[in-house]
Length: 546
Image (cartoon, rainbow, N blue to C red; front, side, top):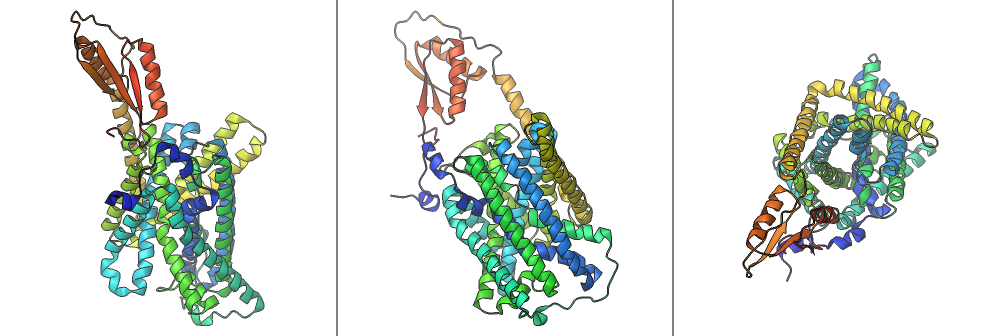
């Protein structure tokens, strides 16, 4: 009979099922690209919101800015395509920066990404719930509770396993992509036929024309760069792909970039040609949808798809935050519990931690999207810059065929993303981005404190020499002793010595949770030349007690 736990999260999966839990390109695109693809719902609007401060006559600049952002997307895609092949173990910006720039740049990239993943969940969930409360104002007092409920549902979906979460979240993602492509196809067809009229839906804004300065254009560019958040997600989750991992991850990355670029440019082009300006109570996407589809069922389906993808954009963070945390935990910079696989072969502790922290953030900010948005995108662009710089050093070290051209591409990306980072920080600093500037050093301090703790524990426990002292017992009778071990260290050697002092019938036992760790214990055991046998118990469901 199934328990409540099994009904909610499914039956435990054995370790040998890991290969079957990996993702094909179709599901991986839905899981790792939902954040990036959903950004087209607000990317163009973020540009227009800045440009409209110079009057409606400045809105034409949105298209050149969109083309620059599309060019940046191309550079990032090429860079991360190279990254997924150069670093097939995953880890993205953290691994690249750590290996090529040093420990502190690597940890800085990791801190920036972790913060951005938490904010992605909080911002996307709150944005999706705002869409619901806009349609049903009576739910506004329950906004925070609805946000937390949404986080609980996505957390539960991810705890069921990578493959099942892919099945759950694939439909909404492709529904949204299909509706956007339908919108663009119908809109462009009507526009070129001259049958598209938007007069009833164009917002009335301040007509006074102001000087369109360079700073305003840079701010519009930095705001539009929100459309690029989530681009790095695939490079962090390479190990979740079916074999060949790097090849499948690279193809998925290209598919994501093509879809993202096409939708972003298409939406900006239509908004630009139709003269759509931001309205106080209606999004640019909504105005465009009404213009193309009218106010009928197709328009409602577009809005429903947009709301759904904004909520499920959080799923990208639930796919990547636990994986990056597990890599950091393996390196000793985060608690080791975050590197443990759960019953369903996912990093359950990381999923639960992300759900808890993002829920806390929503409670602190009252589910107010506008209060959290200034914190957004600072971290991800900092990680972009560090990753690009790291890849430049990587090519200079490797000097493989075509390395100079690749280094130039990555160098150009580092410069552009670095400028974008500075502009984002400058324009959003007084509106809340200062919090991120403070949080990153705090994360770095925590990383180093955890690392120091583990290093200190190892120094205290691990013996300088693996020497096993044999004992002679005069009594012919002795008890049977079974000694559970987690590794070979001073504590375990002391326990073995005590056991051998009272019996000759001693067996050491280790539960095989990690084949690599178990093999390391075997090697250390053989080096001691102990007469105590070591037995490794297989544990297909990664449970010590069972």
